Length: 362
Image (cartoon, rainbow, N blue to C red; front, side, top):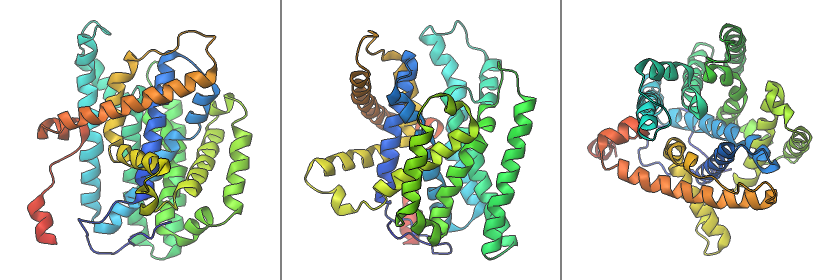
């Protein structure tokens, strides 16, 4: 794995992006689009089962790693939380208010309801649970840093993880009983504790060299992950069991880390097919958040292979190709939205960079 800045380093606005992180983000967002596309068709083939076993845990693991990386470059918890709110929750709220208008225009619902839009903000329906769930985990990372400051040393770090997981488990159990009505569930609360282990893994990869060595250099841990992943992916019902789902996601993340974390810039820039694929994944990874929110507008209009006799491999490959097309369509749409600073901030969470401030800090 590439060396990363450690906690306490000075702020470096021009710090380079990490190659393997962007590549894994690009791969994950492509799998998200393909998985949602097959969901729109109502299919449940082995390809979709494989995708759903680890694609969202991979995103949250990378989010934990980048949260620790971002905090190490500044160390200001208030700025960290503020930036995360602007980049994650502002787009979430704006989309929840705007989507009913879009659905009225396209004829999917009869009329706009502000009450329904506000309930959508609270419940996080559909795939939108990802954004508030991510923000909750980022808030927990800030709480973890506060615990570390109060209890310095390795004990404080371990205690931080244990305390936060206990809190997440308790809140999830309480919320599961309180919001048991199937017509109204706060999805992102119910999913938070499932994603906490992989998010914590991402944080630990950055902050603890021993964990990083175990995952990326030892042979035993990745081998155990492969065996565990294979055992848990034998059938679909285990995805409905929270602990089975968490273990599958953890195993999948460890496997993907072992495969991709050693990628260098030279490999990405190579003039061969492998280099081309890595460059495209890296490009999609830089736009992954925008692709996630914009693809939702495009996926429902892409029915594929309605013939049930079509081989599943052909369905999966066709969806993979069209998913790539949708990803690049979202990249183009993102460029159009970025022409308006207001729309870019409201719906993508991307704010104009303060070039003068960056130049002054350099």
